Length: 136
Image (cartoon, rainbow, N blue to C red; front, side, top):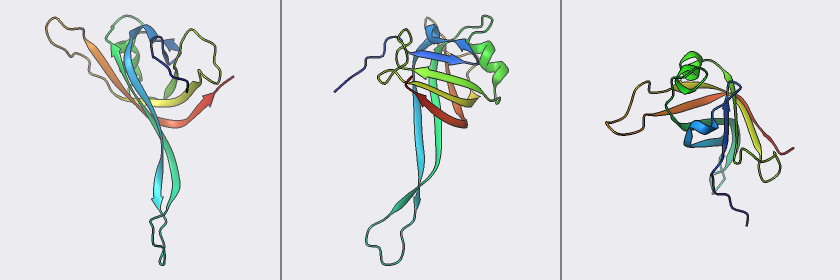
């Protein structure tokens, strides 16, 4: 079984590589389960419905030009391209797929944290189009 320890994930938003500002995150792909159980069935049955995806990425806050706060403040509620892959410095392939989707950021804390701590900027990106998986 192949395993992966995340140490150099690639995250790009609006054509800007923000990988060096990422502490962690998740990219979730899902489908609705629509109940299609009918009379006479003795077990519940479901049909696949609409697909959905979202990303929750924890960034280190940075107010510099084309960095976290500036990009997401300007793009709040606006569809842009998100690209994520497990290993940044490695070519895209079957064990390092490239996930690309158009999403909209729905929240970012502009100032948060406590004395002596790094200021973090967790961003939620909601689906605004399909999520593609490329291995070439």
